[in-house]
Image (tube, rainbow, N blue to C red; front, side, top):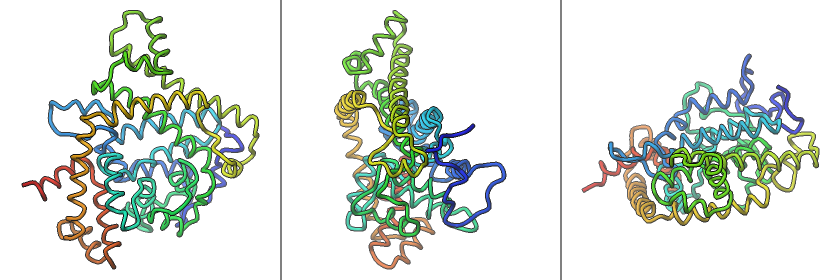
Length: 385
């Protein structure tokens, strides 16, 4: 299938930091995608938090909630859909989508906030920068290099999918950028921008599902919100008397469709007007080419505000945030002060570190790579009285 002139073209890829022979049957970004899927970090996303922390036990309803892995798969699906509709390179869009959360620590954004505070004296912590550290350094499976040796375009997309990176850089991003200039002050490719918007679409959609299942709010309350209310009204008109779970699904899939169709329509209109002739023209524009329309963006802000109050800051969620923050606040200094409590390879790296900053970064790599369940079990083993 031919792609648009402003799409990233496989033949124009800037290649890999460590040169490799081209595949005879896969494009560079198909190869990147496959390496990400087969990475250890990708597998660990199965047991990392999206919103609700994973628990053990048959009574827990958490099996129904999204994990960081299922979220990532949904983002990749949305990214392929939008990229395909716009004539972009679907393989690159999918690659960035699959990699965008590899750097998330256990316990979701709560874990990221805790580790950012703990790492403040040592160069900070940011999950996008940590994703780059994983794919350039911490995955160690190949004979010729550390990391996955992804293409420049994939690394650029991981670094910049949320927009240009300005100001002081997290040390992990600074290290990667020093080795290979990712041109951080420009926009990312259109494909990476698609991955970023797909992230918004996916979590706004599935957090509504998960919040309902967790009984943090009701369908009636959601029906008071823009976009969602009309979706429920349409379902009630077309399917009067539909059972609750089907009604919920039908309404929320319409909300999902509104977001995707809006992004595609806005991008098509802007691309038709601007007529970019290369991927670099997309990067050099003043703002992103892929975004929601202004009216829908305002409606999504209202939905996000509702979710923030009723879901992300719900008392039960806040209590859990405090609990898991304490776990990280106790484990991190324990490993920093006594590296012997970490497994062999990590212990050796920490003990060989040149100073406390480098030792802290080893500890960070170890702790950030933990799944929720492993962090909880290690905390119990090491610190529970």
